[in-house]
Length: 420
Ligand SMILES: [Cu+2]
Image 1 (spheres, rainbow, N blue to C red):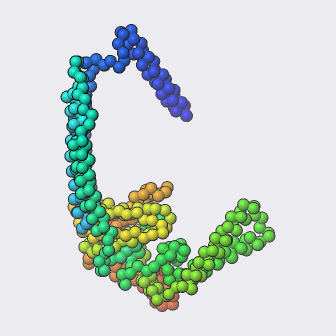
Image 2: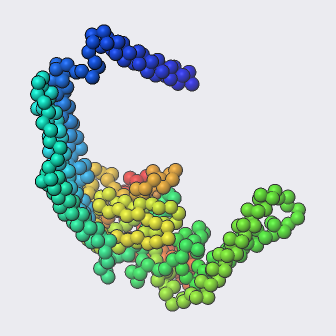
């Protein structure tokens, strides 16, 4: 507190001192009978030279940054389309850098060359149509090329994926990612946010059973509220009572929608959901396989960012966004290439989405096909059904067993510990 006051005092006194200095300067120039606006020839020459010195300093800083951090500081891409995207980004950089040097050199050198000379009057040159045309048309053409190439890359990345592409959903919420592999049928089952339930349906997947369970949950919670409201022995302040009543009416609206959903539901596609596999913590990918990622968000807008694969897209509540890519390097290969033993690919949130945004990330491991198949063979038994809706059939046992056998993979093990 005291230091703050002292700092404030120093600042105030500094400002006053500066004002007094200005005043002295004004008075001396009055005594010398020269206006403050009259700058001496010597000062002009010094300023002109300082412009050039600043230009040299600016360019030296630019080259120093380039040498220190490397060309754009990204490293090589680890996806097939990433190479093309890097080419495009490099093209942008080349254009920007060329324009940067051209305009800055002109600016500083003109200030130096045309410094005010006594007796020389400035050349009055207000307008030139040809020049205007030139600096409008040339940038417009260059921009058009960049934009068209960029749009092409964008439609490539977000366009339709091949039928054999592996479909994976990435579900975002404050503050983590959950992956859902589409299972044996390679089709992601349907979902509806109204069915979301932390206990048995974190992703709001849509089947006859999940609807039934959602209705049961809703009925139970409505019963609890109703009995609280009707219990005379509980003293409740009017504000609490009102908020409970609002909650109850909201829930009764929701349960009507759930009943409608139940009536309309056709269970013949339920298996598309049941064989889906939910995976948290780490996303496992296979090198050389095309992946179609479908993104959803539970709460706010997040942004899925895979820096090494050069992919990023927003995840938006109420809609599914998509892109595809083919990983072209395994985690092990990247560790050798970057000479970094603990290197890991990462998926992170790239949109400030709340207090713990900074830790919203998921490790990504890319494996060779054989390793990947081993992992998947164990993992695919842990379906949505066996995890959450195991009925009397034997699926539960095999599901739980495979949970431990997954960890036998050496790479998976080492990367998991590295992440922690
Ligand atoms: Cu986020």
